[in-house]
Image 1 (cartoon, rainbow, N blue to C red):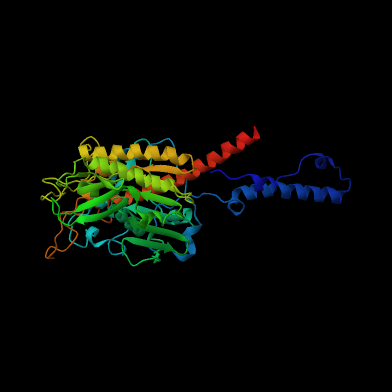
Image 2 (cartoon, one colour):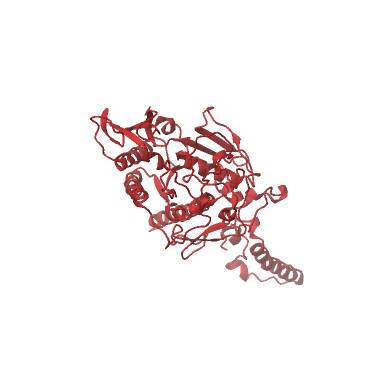
Amino acid sequence: MKHYQTNLHDHEVPSGKYQTLILKTPRKIALLVFALLLLTIIPFYYRSNSIFLTKTIPNPPSSLPFSPPKDEEPHEELPTISNNLKCDIFTGEWVPNPEAPYYTNTTCWAIHEHQNCQKYGRPDSEFMKWKWKPDGCELPVFNPAQFLELLRGKSLAFVGDSVGRNQMQSLICLLSRVEYPIDVSYTKDEKYKRWKYTSYNFTMASYWTPHLIKSKEEDNHGPTNTGIFGLYLDEFDEAWTTQVEDFDYLIVSAGHWFMRSMVFHENNKIAGCHYCLLDNVPEVGMYYGYRKAFRTAFKAINSMKFYKGITYLRTFAPSHFEGGMWNKGGDCVRTKPFKSNETQLEVVSLEFYMIQLEEFRAAEKEGRKKGLKYRLLDTTQAMLLRPDGHPSRYGHLPEENVTLYNDCVHWCLPGPIDTWSDFLFEMLKTEGIRSAEEKRHSRDRRLH
């Protein structure tokens, strides 16, 4: 563990001409011996107790109770920095973790009903007892006290569809071992929620925008009876773009809604559609709209006058329907993860993923001109391997008279989506290292 040396130097024995003074009387000699002994002891004392002189970074506790003792003051801790700068934390395998889960459906009120798998009778529990193991390094388990300390005075927003909201609710549950937030939403609309952790002055928000851009339902039936949505490919969704300028971190995501029927509007006219079956409207495919939507969303971020935050793209998390499409009886009934050599991305998921990467790189390049930072929260590979983590039919009571398809898109809580917070926390810690390195290099250049 490294400590800053500035304070220690203030207590070291002086050097130079003062060491050559000769004290001739016995009393002065005795005083000199006593002073030298005292000055010899002090540096060793401070080295062994340097926490009182410098802000050190302690190792995280191996586990946290659901309600930490008040006298422990977990918010005083700072995160341990791991050595993952050169390791791809997103490539690896799932390995058993008997210590999981770190919350339950009875200890966290933030779980959405449709993802509350244990409440609604899912019979197995092994899907909650895995952790992600990157190839060549370790990914520490999420530490809620350290996360809140690291984000003290900061703000984080999730921008995207209900899977993004799923991620936020997972994070709230993981943080519940330290503190629950209070609702400080500016509207009663559940699509836009804002939470505050008062002890840490940390704000977290979600903005539901399934297409990331301006969109509206133009027909509530359509060819698949799931509606036709009009997407305005060159127009911002001001429901979120006017609200996030002051946030320190944005997590942007979107995907599954682009598989529905859509009509694309561009330059104030219809440019085409995806499976709309409308007369005189050309079929241009969902990938056309998907690419343009991300391009416009990133343009909105890069054009914000006062935004200085870091933007994370959370990559596409594949669904796992088997035996049929999502609206044709498909289901997800597996009970354990795949190995990385047992499956691969199917065509649509792969194309979505590649489009995200391409638009992300273009936005990152443009944002760099304004000093903005983009980071890739690459969850795709890890979640591809988790067909066992979805609610399926365990999002409601069997006898309920509801029209719901088997859910193989969202994720049970607790469940594999909790690992996204492991990824995020590791990236936040790494970001601190990068910032320190950038400052050091900048200072060195000035000195030379």
